[in-house]
Image 1 (cartoon, one colour):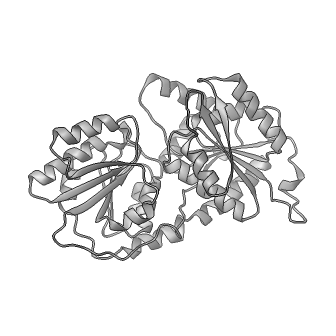
Image 2: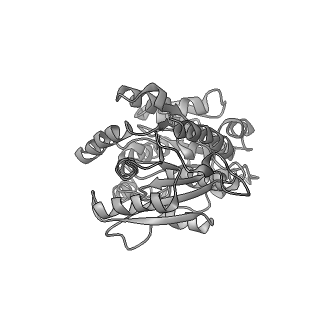
Image 3: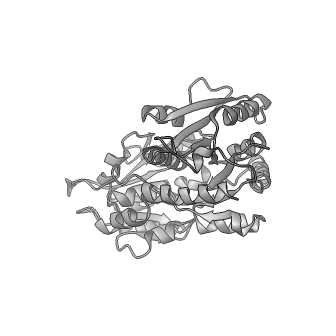
Length: 379
């Protein structure tokens, strides 16, 4: 960014905010990236930034996006941008007007749509552009087209943040400059996610859980098959699946077809995950691809053992934790064997929580992004 920023960014005085940050997201639910946006805006606001959240509201939607509602519930400044179709010139004009009227210093984008719109709307304006790549959906011609647009738009960004080594490598392979690409790990609110006393019933089934978008890359159909196989071998397992998405009906039919309705429950979204994780004997995430999954961090912070595919940053998160393990992605036999060996959790695992507290808190994430913004401002 070559034009000078508003003076509030670098010379705050008399209680003025450190600067104005707008987090921009195209959101279809409350998943990991949404939790990053909420946590980051909350932490930045407590540090004196004017942090706001903008969410695309898609043309045919009668309801406002969950991210917008959640932000307002927390008292954060949040607003919707009505978007009528894939490419909407009026939405682009609304975004540009927002940047001008709000005197935005940093526009922080969190998905391919916000990246493309921001690149066009901010052209010629004194706004630093920052993007975080949380991961990619890979299936379908439309998604590949979006990825192509995203890669080209990112070349005009001041800083591009990757949440895992895999994403960082792909960005560099796509031709982005090394100086523009930064690793920033996700962080969670460790005050919210914490261990709780357990009241284990030795006669109850072993309780497993997963929280994820119900989409192909999460590989949940294989997890359901694995639970069926474990029960066939005599292991008393119960699985809760939290989340929603395009495969919900298909997964529900699979549960019924396998006769697992009593043992595998698709519970939809959940507002109190911090009370759910501590009740699990293990959290399971059999994804085929990930960035840095927030659900894994949340489970760890609650002292819950984790079984997860060795994708994205998962191997780093779980390395050396004695009651957690990584699995080859897509390996059905390895998943079954791991589920067969899960012990009942007698007490929360403090080693997992301590790792999150030391390296993956919201406060640490906010520190990292403050440095990213400073670099972007002076790029």
